[in-house]
Image 1 (cartoon, rainbow, N blue to C red):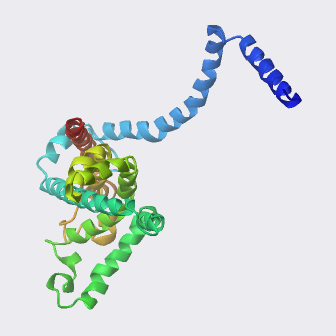
Image 2 (image 1 turned 180 degrees about the horizontal axis):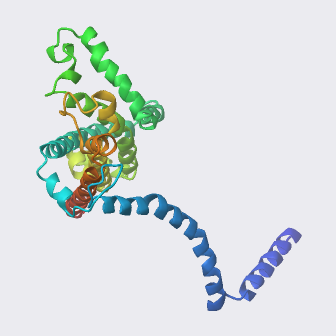
Length: 315
């Protein structure tokens, strides 16, 4: 046995003796250490309460008043909430928001899954393509929205004058102004959804596809029986996040149409902003915001319940 080996064994033996000889922390010592962790949490908790919880509570308080955003106010009880269900403009905004969110969610997930499956295949330069597809997510959507606004209102009518819908400036068409907003929202949202789907696809063992190919399963059969069931959890995440995000659409509309023509593309968030901060309806639109939060919460929980049940069926 060499000298180096003997020294190494001696060091290991001495270290193990020191570890065995170390006394574990007593309950009293752990109790003294616990407050230190609490003091590390309290500053973050205080900041969260001050910048999030307190404004929410103040907003809920003012939703029971007639406060216009300035001057005096009085309590009106549930009058603001009752009036919301009789307001045609509010109901139209909810209808547009849900229609837009459903269309954008479906398109985003279909396109993102198709692109992710293509990037997951063995193609040349796929890492570069992943970076390119993620670029829209890091760009300021309001700035990009104004670029799209110029594209739809100026460039496309000049380049495609023979197409009626494009030649007349689609953004000024009350029936079709929603379409450019969907295009912009899907273009921006696909970046994040692609990353989620790529993460799911990379967890699937390649041997499953090889075995399915040997059994004669074609591409669609492999997707239906292998790919989609194994990424169902990632599909649930994307669906919930997409629908929640699209229901709160704001920047896209401000950049492209600002809610127009008229109120044809006015979403709930844009209505709350316009009425609450510039229309003298602070308390009324605060009540609208409270209802909107409840609606989004219920929709998200229902999505989770339905989609997770589907995951269990796949499992």
